[in-house]
Structure formats: structure tokens, C-alpha cells
Amino acid sequence: MTEDPDKPNVHRRHPDPLGYDTRRPFHEVAKQMAEDALAGRHQDAVDAELEMVRKRWRRLHDDA
Image 1 (cartoon, rainbow, N blue to C red):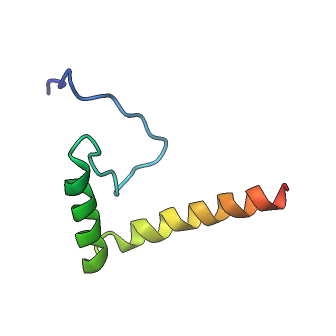
Image 2: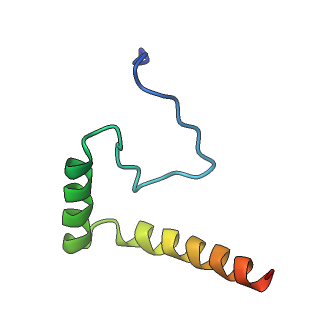
């Protein structure tokens, strides 16, 4: 497999099933996200991501 020299290398600690290609025009990505949300696609991944945000938010406010 050859690497695309124009594509940046992204290293994540965890898999990102919601990893939309933000190099695409914003309106295309936003439309895809909206369609996915309305159709209920990736709901498990959305729930997991929201839980991580909630935990960080609680930590932020607990430290204040």
C-alpha cells in the first residue's frame, strides 16, 4: 500500500468511527454528519463520545 503524500498522518489513541474527513468542503461534511444523525447511524459511537465529553466536563467543574 502506498501512502498519499498529500494526506496527513493522524495518530489516535482510540479508533474514531466518527472520523469524518474534514479536508472535504465544510458543507459536504456537515451534510453527511446531519444525514447520519437523522438516520441514527453511528449511535453507539456518538454515545461513547458524548460520555467522554461529560466526564471531562465534570472533571473540569470538580477542580474549580
